[in-house]
Length: 314
Image (tube, rainbow, N blue to C red; front, side):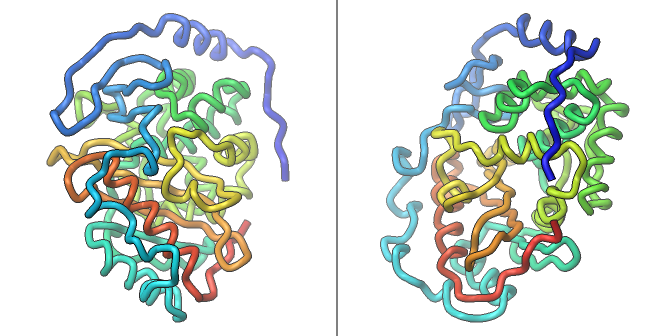
C-alpha cells in the first residue's frame, strides 16, 4: 500500500523551514577515537546531538585495522552459514563476532541472539519520528529524504519540534511503534545525556526493532519513509546496505564507555524473500569504522546462511 506524501504547508511546516534555515555551524572537540563533532546539517560533518557523522567512510575505504575487517573467507560459506534453524544461525554468528546482537522477526515470533537488552537507538529512532511527522502533515519529501536517507540531524530535530517536542512528540512517535507491533518500547521524551537528543536515546532492543520492521509496511503514512530507507547513501554503504534491495536505517554513537555502537534495522532479501532484521555491534577498538566492518561481516553471513527465514507480517 502506498501513501502519498502530504505537501501542503502546515503551520508547523513553516516552523520546520525556519529551523532549518537558522541552523548554525560550530566545531566541538570529541574524544580522540571519535569523529570531530560539528553542529550542522551539512553533509560530511557530525552532530553532537546524535554522535553521528553523515559522511562517514564506507567500510571499503575505512582505515579499520586488518584484524577488525571482514574475514578473508567471507566470500565462501562459513561455519556460521551452515544449514540449520534460525536460532542456530544467529547463535553461531554471535559466537564468532562476540559483542553483537541480532534479531529477525515475522511480527509475531522473534528470534534473537547476543545483545538483546534495550540500548540507545541513535538515529534508528528517526523512523517513527518521521512517520509521525508525515502523518500529521509536517514532513515533505525533502525533509523525509534528509532525515532518513542521509540521516541529517537538523531535519530530524525539526520534525521532532513540529510534533511538539518532549512528551507530546514522544507520545505521537510512540503510537507509530505500537501500530507496527512494538508496544514495549517507550520513546524517550526527556534528555538523558546532555549532549544528545531525547529521542536518539530511546532504549530499543534488536528484538523489538525487528518486530517493528516486520509490521512497518502496515503502518499508515509509512510508505514515504520506507521509500527513503531504500535509497542508498554512499556514506553508509556497509552492513545491511551491502545486501541488494535493502530498506534500512542505521544509527551510531558513543556508548557511556566512549566506544562506538553502530546499529541497523531493515527489510532485506535473504533466501529469496524479505526478512525483517535488526543488529548492533560495538567496535573492537572503539572506532566507528571498525564497527562498520563487523556489521558488514554479519550481513554477509546472514546472506550465506542456509535456513528458512521468517517472512514479515506486512
